[in-house]
Amino acid sequence: MTDIQTLIADEARPMLEQLAAGQDIDGRRAAALLAVAGGQSQAEAAAAHDLTEGQVGYIVRKFREQGLAAFSTATEA
Image (cartoon, rainbow, N blue to C red; front, side):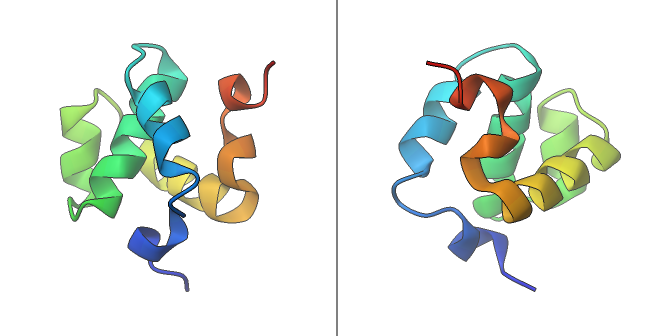
């Protein structure tokens, strides 16, 4: 399985950081994803960003499969 730190390509990080600045669900998910990539456990990231562990696991899996397309606001133009 791909390690989450290597999963976030340098090109995706700025968009994730931009999304993480928001307070909507995509913002909280992006912030949690970045936290996990930074070394936090999914439980720590969930607690820090007002999500459940299941929600954090969901976005990690979805990001592995779809990349930035996992975030609805990332694909809107």
